[in-house]
Amino acid sequence: MGVILRNLQKVVPLRRARLRKDVDTLRHILGIQKFDLGVICVDNQRIQQINSIYRKKNLPTDVLSFPFYEDLRPGKLPCPLHRDELNLGDIFLGVEFVMNQCREESLDLHGALTVVTAHGICHLLGYRHETEEEWTEMLQRESYILSEYNRLTGRHLEPLMKRCSQDR
Image 1 (cartoon, one colour):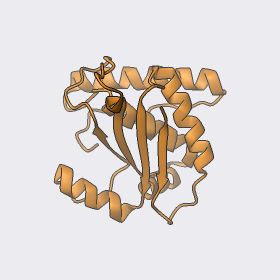
Image 2 (cartoon, helix red, strand yellow):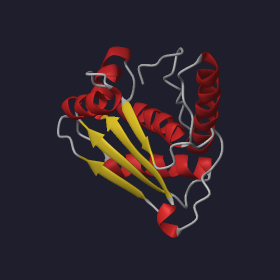
Image 3 (spheres, helix red, strand yellow):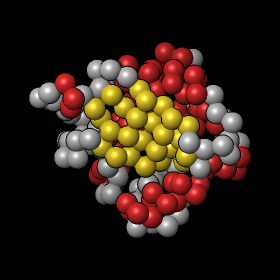
């Protein structure tokens, strides 16, 4: 199974091949290679529109996840009954929003996109951060994913989650 990577924005120049490779590495770390995954890159206007419709927050954001399996327990992989259920869902990356964060914090765009994608995949796998306990659990999972990613790639990425926040 594979990754569907779409770039629907023209604001930020994006190296899709690099992002695809990073997404494939994250899928390998999590053992989810057999599942399809959609990654859609959008600008601030589109992510704000989606955020407003689905979360009632009329603001742009870095990532929105739409899981195929809505009631998945964190840390448990889905058990599909049919081949067409080998799907984790879709992640919308607010590339323009992430780029603006990178400028403010002097971060590498592609590294930040990888971190945000890992965050989105965690949501597809049932992780949430609406309570302190959930935030801690998700932060631990993201930290593990990124430490493995760093070990495999020689990079030095860290989670962007700093505190319990319902803004994501």
